[in-house]
Amino acid sequence: MQNVKKFSQNKNLLLNAKKTKVMDSDKSPASSILIDNEALENVTHFNYLGANIEADGKITPDIRKRLAIETSKLKSMMNIWKSQSTPLKMRILKSCIFPVATYGCETWTLTKKDVEKIDAFEM
Image 1 (cartoon, rainbow, N blue to C red):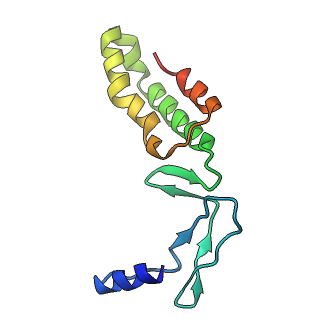
Image 2: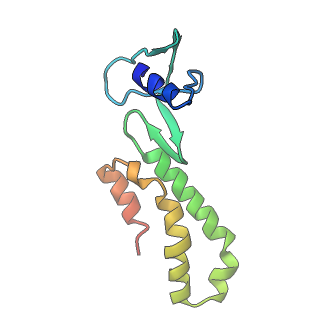
């Protein structure tokens, strides 16, 4: 972290120790990192670009959140579902709804149970 701080300062960027968080992703004890004699906060989860990342690697909360958002979007479009043809509905689902549900999926570490939940929504 000291090297990151030095490199950043050379580029006129400041590292804010109060806003910087540390997350250990293994079972080792929490590490203590100091910047300018100020300890960085250890966290067990954080939100990165809308995706929830957990220290234990579980993604179930993020999947639940994504599916809840997807369901909300579907409900808000109920008048479209009643009046349009099936091919158009499928195009809307694939272009507008599925990306909402899968946003941030690159960070997911899937378990068999999670895959079964996701498979239930495929068509």
